[in-house]
Length: 119
Image (cartoon, rainbow, N blue to C red; front, side):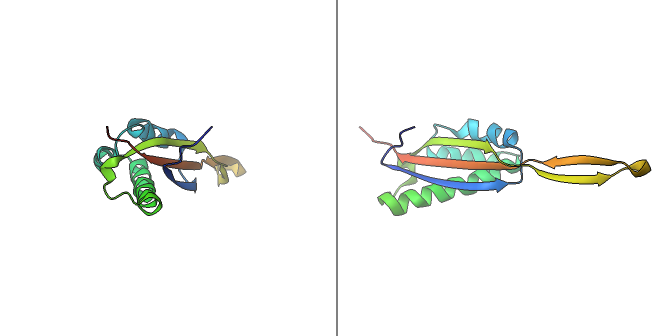
């Protein structure tokens, strides 16, 4: 996959949260302008929205440093996705000496913004 030259991104790995929960949030902001996505994430009731909001702020800051973008309204979320990471395996003792296995899923999150050309 070819990346745009005017693209800045932020990644976070090993988030102890299911990728399914993150994708629900990420799918709603993909393709939106940064201020609009910021407002949407601030009002979402999901814990995943706070994680994605942090990465969006970080990607916006990276774009400001990399390209000298003054106004975040010039930026558009070009790529945003949540991949599956390794699962933590834990064991819970149960009745009569049995053990139940519990898996804690992890995720890898990537948010990329690019400068939108105004015509």
